[in-house]
Image (cartoon, rainbow, N blue to C red; front, side):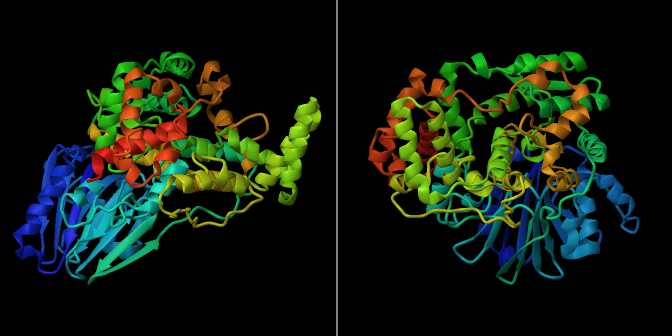
Length: 608
């Protein structure tokens, strides 16, 4: 992985202020690339780079990199899978290295702005075209690699891999974005189409940007398929199996040591089983929680089956408060995903002798792994109840409970549920991945700002694939990919997600939902394709996820002190945005309490 940065402004070459500013930008993201740094200066553009060497460890991989004509110069963060096959089809280009970076340059020469359609991988790219005097930028389809940009105080176009690099220039106002704060309260993360800062923007996943003569043009180059496949289950399993195996094989390619995270679930177990075919000495890493949260027995069963070099890490309660502060201090935006501490601990361990790690992220969204998909299937089958009668249903439920008529109470409760959530889209928007309700958020925030993601595909209320697509395009890029990229980069390691292979995603998104979820089982196709590779422990265990026991954590004595110091002090920075009395009403040792503490700590560390 790497860090990229740059500034575009007329006659920038002759102003040392910007050269110094570019160095500040790359210094701020040295963790993204400790192996090398590079700079190139043009009359109207300057580019900076930090390198973490993964493929072609020689000096040939140095960036910024020029094309053979010297008319194009690239800074690139990411990995292009299958780039060697692409290279074979570009025989007319005089390659000087074995890098995917140079392949991108040659593809840009050949296809121009159509370049992204030919890339499969995780990437954030900026190409300065000296002839056209324009900057061409593009980000991968699922938001695996970040790309932020802003307009500076003097009209500069500034871009970087992380927000801290843009702020390092001193050219952008640091005012917070109330809409982003609202979204954070509702969902525990910042939406993937905006940032926490009012004056800094993010290039959305599957989008490209052209900056030309002071004008910014943004367009979407890819979308999830709309048409559902007409395919038999047998053929679906066969195709699915082939796509997963190809993706794993491609993503194991590296010139450094590769390992895998092993959580004890179906997804990571499958990836470890497949990875061990290509790596006879695979290192696996897991995080051990205490009590019922611990999934390491299942992880160990897979490790033993495939003879991996398995390592486990854990956290002591007394270390959690300071670690939470440390992580949030380094994160450019607040993120209340409870797995941030486990991810930090496991990445820190991995960094001791591994540079690339395979993860099982996105399997739940693609293969139907969440219980709420089963609930949404039930909604589809039962239909809605008239919202006009919601009050009547509530009265009926309360009266039935009072007289002890359980069957009637269950009837009315079901009616209440289906009146509140008349279809799967309403349920997905109002129930899934939600923390504070809209009303609670309105009471908490001192402004009336709110933000709701606009989807680039139709929200078909009759198709169970719709909520899966919604999850794939909101929480994946807004939460999971942010967590993985930023925390892995804190330790200068690269996380790869084989399930986010473009071809696999397109296939799974178009696959009939009946092959993924039914009333009795989730991830049907994964079980049918790879169940024989797993153990009974994993196949029969209940869905857990990579969360944390926040109720227990919030009651750690030092955590209670930290919470009181920030959330019970009217002078804390969080109360610049939130109402003090409303915050006090929500300090109940639950996820709402946790997210408020995260926001409070983050604001103490980042707000001036």
